Length: 163
Image 1 (cartoon, rainbow, N blue to C red):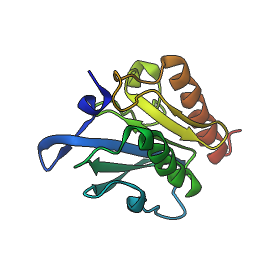
Image 2 (tube, rainbow, N blue to C red):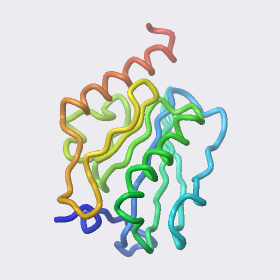
Image 3 (spheres, helix red, strand yellow):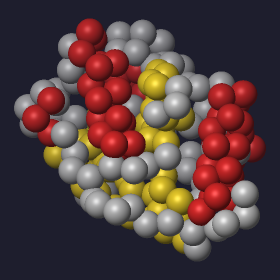
Image 4 (spheres, rainbow, N blue to C red):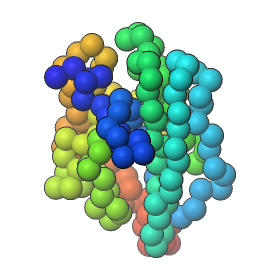
């Protein structure tokens, strides 16, 4: 199945074309980042929500896509959008699939999130995407998820004063 046929969200109870974007902070974000709507094709809508627990916060953007961007715009759009979350202090920002989210300390654990992340951005490494418009849908492998899991564990330990 093509990437654009694989990406969907629930929008007011209906399944529609869209993206789930997330960002992780150990503790609380210093500022609420704004979605960079101006770089996306017209007609997108965004709902934001926040998940949190002891020592962590995850910001989630549900993005309704009424018109997919051009194939050559896909990577730069995702990268800039995820990067905007990291500029606001997130340790990692990613694109995920419905039903593939786990609260820390299980965040990015392959046992919980295998085949559920298709793009991410971390400042130390940059942007990585496995799913491209017009191509067969793919996700980030379990080895990369495990590296992200370790990054989150380290960040939470540092935030708690454990490392």
